Image 1 (tube, helix red, strand yellow):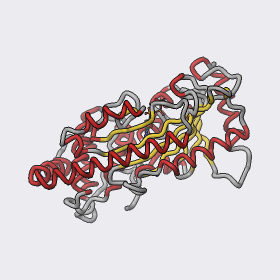
Image 2 (cartoon, rainbow, N blue to C red):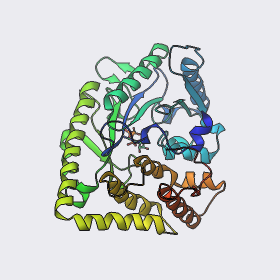
Image 3 (tube, helix red, strand yellow):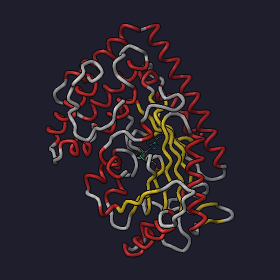
Image 4 (cartoon, rainbow, N blue to C red):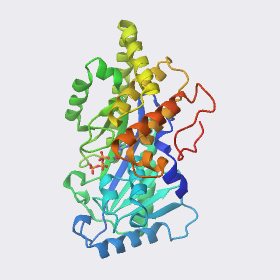
Length: 368
Ligand SMILES: Nc1ncnc2c1ncn2[C@@H]1O[C@H](COP(=O)(O)OP(=O)(O)OP(=O)(O)O)[C@@H](O)[C@H]1O
């Protein structure tokens, strides 16, 4: 399992399956939990942090319980920085978790849909990531892992407040649920900012593909609940599902409108993007993201038949710096990476057209 984890770009959440996968790339639920009587990670000494990692590992890996889903332990300080970068690129751990590896750990399921980050901002961050709109399923999975942990570990919990967390914004349920949405038509019809800004009034936050502090590139928006206190987990999940369905309807309408009123301009934009990505020799990650968005819409609208939607999801990860360097087997400067990115992009997008195309990367063993 470890080999696929570090060598294969595609991971569960980008399979392109699940409900409404045209608009919703993935659904995520994460729970923040802390152990009773231990300082929060930012105040924890490295030896204590390492003890805590072992304690959690013992609770869920070394218990030899064959009735539960196996979780694999990864000691972050024992893997190469580039491999930690791969985990970041696949959204399995955060950049902060990768940076200071000593005293931090990761538990992960074989299909990579469950990840438990040990000693990130909180002692435990339980993450469940699934493709498409599957918030209920993601919540069920996270919740059962949480029960499993809680059976063995003593969580910091207050009767009145709920779960206690390092940052007060997570107190209560400790739950952040999110969907990663592709909303190009709302952007092209200038409705995105109005629609997305109004979500703040409903207690929702909008972020980019890479989470807190990231810009929304490639018309990809991560929408999540802002409030964790005073609402039940089920309410948080169902509110987000309602908002997601509304955005899907708006995006669908905007696509119809573009097709009806400005079809030639729309096709022109899509085929220019396709032309650029299948011809460019130097490609920045920013340009790759924004042009991929149009190609993806072209695939969704049936204009570009030869590219599978999952390939586009995979390119979000495969064209990231860590993956490019892993594929090349060496460190690369930014220009070398831009060249490698362009080569890989051409090969993958044209793969459906010509057989025997070189994939341009050693780390891709996956077949559609
Ligand atoms: N629906 C999703 N699909 C794929 N990746 C996601 C999704 N939601 C969040 N992520 C990824 O999870 C990581 C963490 O996201 P983010 O920083 O938004 O939240 P967090 O760390 O859970 O919360 P907080 O900011 O409260 O600590 C980022 O890499 C982000 O891209």
